[in-house]
Amino acid sequence: MNATAPLPPASGSVFRRRIEDLGEFEPARLTGRVVQVIGLVVECEGLAAPVGARCAIRRGVARGGGQIEGEVVGFREDRTLLMPYGRMRGVAPGDTVECLSTRQTVPVGEQLLGRVLDGLGRSMDGRGSFLASDEYPLYADPPDPLRRKRITEALATGIRSIDGLATVGRGQRMGIFSGTGVGKSVLLGMMARYTDADLNVVALVGERGREVRDFLERDLGEEGLARSVVVVSTSDRPALLRVRAAFLATAIAEYFRDQGRDVLLMMDSVTRVAVAQREIGLSAGEPPATKGYTPSVYAMLPRLLERSGCGEVGSVTGLYNVLVEADDLTEPVSDTVRGILDGHVWLARDLAQRGHYPAVDVLASISRVMIDVVSEEHKRAAEELASVIATYREAEDLINIGAYVDGTNPEIDRAKRLIGRINTYLRQRIAERSSLEEAREKLFELMRAPAAPVALGAKAQPNAAPRGPGVPGGGPGVPGVGPTTRAGDKP
Image (cartoon, rainbow, N blue to C red; front, side):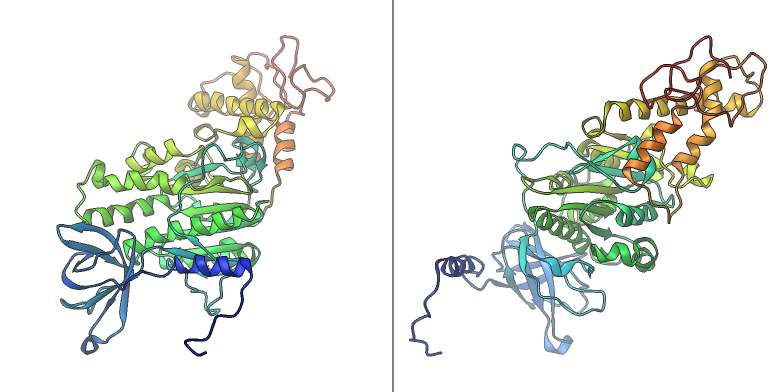
């Protein structure tokens, strides 16, 4: 086209789009040069780029050429501190550094469903590149708290022990806390396949490279992958790329939420995101605080976790895996995250060692919105089941050594009768799908079991027929909930 030729006429919407496009261009070409590399940080002179800007380091032809992308993480005196997304091999003093963009965005669209992306949003599943229909800001602000919808509807996760006893609401942020090797990844895969959310966004941050394909093919499967977007940044990737992957997955989930969808965002794990942020902070010169975690870690966690939840339309239900160091729930990251989220599920090592999967410890798990998303009947049944488990645990040592005499305590007698059926309810095979309705009905059925004391010295009958409202011989109580003990009841 001739340079002096007029532009073709444009409609109002196209004209507005052209005006908006102008804001995406940089007003000037910002460049600098490398003067020093210390550890994970590249120090540059002459680069007047803001924190968060995406830059490229252009290596000399004699050292292989090409470029390494990175991000501005801070300043020291008159130098700009840059951390690369890749390995710094070949970078030398004097290399040119160019600012590519001061505003980072994420490619989004329906084309992402079924795809596996890296921390930069590029395809890594061998299916070629894709043309995204839109873009979203990488580091967006959380929704306005006064414009969030209240959480009033339950979301089925497909896990019976969670749906029945720590019910998750649409738009809730739930933590899955555990030590290493107790089944977190398997649990995430089951949720991705069995949930009734519209789609899943899965972030695998800091995982072992070997485990990624295992998760995709064994835990997630074709069914789960078809309705998911998976973002992967393994433990060997630079710290900045691992943190970016967490924000990338969150931005993708926000896009689908704003389309009116109910999204399940699963992140494994928040602890490794915090460790990566600690590496960035220490390299940039931040002072270490508790257990070496820098102040930027504690500032980053709420900014990341608060972005999920309900919007004006749609919802992002966040399930965040937290890898607990030495199974200690009071260590810094676990304690901080637990205070931000709306509840937590604790996976207990002793249950996993007994072959009890999912290894959900009912007494150590809580959903802070369960009271708003289930009926009073359901809530009371869950409370009663937890009370039965607590009673059994208190007397378990006496029962195991034969020191407890049946008939001494009616509550312990009932716990002994029910514990086998309770464990059956809480266990679930990997290929076993459970709906929210099934979890609720089986819970009600379980709590209709007999509550009567046995005669002193008599042996409890572990397989006694259920008793309760609607069952011949049943006692009074809340419908669907085990009755209280009556002196006239017989075993």
